[in-house]
Structure formats: structure tokens, C-alpha cells
Length: 131
Image 1 (cartoon, rainbow, N blue to C red):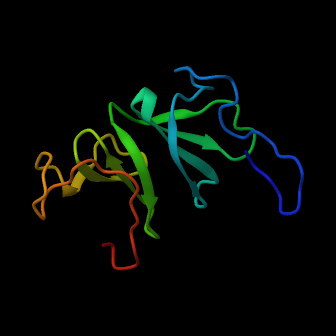
Image 2: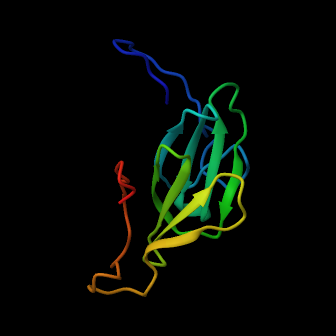
């Protein structure tokens, strides 16, 4: 929902077509970020195990950019890298938009409480030092 300050109504810009797995639907979306470079919204669609990119203008349908991911949280740094927190794999992966694979940058060593592990991976934040 896009809503201007002091407005009493808004405009649906992503989904809005009930829950589902079509290109114009989401199922259990958990996070959204704005990619100013490409003028798109990027959603984590946890229920469909995908990350979907939606054009900010005329965003009728989204494009799946990452598949088979238990994505919960998203972050993007100033260099355009997308960080995806995978709740089920207990890891954070870094993706360059348009690439077909990403690299693990945190976790990825199973569930646990060691410094190289997560016990679920929810929301993430990447600072200016890329940490």
C-alpha cells in the first residue's frame, strides 16, 4: 500500500489479488525494500519461497528474481547488492540483481548458537561498512 503523508487513503502497488502464487499475487510477504536504482519494490514472499521484484510504476505483475528461498528479511547496500535472510537455511546470502546465484555471507553452518550460525534468520541490516 502506497500512502502519501496526511492522506486518508492509499493505492495498492503490490499484490492485492488475494493470496496465491501467480505473478500478481503474494503469499505471506514478510519484508519489502525500495530499489531506487531500478525504481522497483522488492518483496520477500515467504509463503511462495521466492523474492519478487515489482516495478513502482504500473506494477501489475512481479518478476521472480530468486527462487527456492525461505526468505524472511531483505536489505540492499549502496552498491546494489541484495542481502536475503533465509530463515530455513539459517543464512544470509548476497545477490547482485540479475545474477543466477548468490554467495553466503553469514551463517550457512546449520542451526545453532556459534558465531558462524543462526537459529532462524529474520530481519537484516547492512551498514556502510558492509557488515
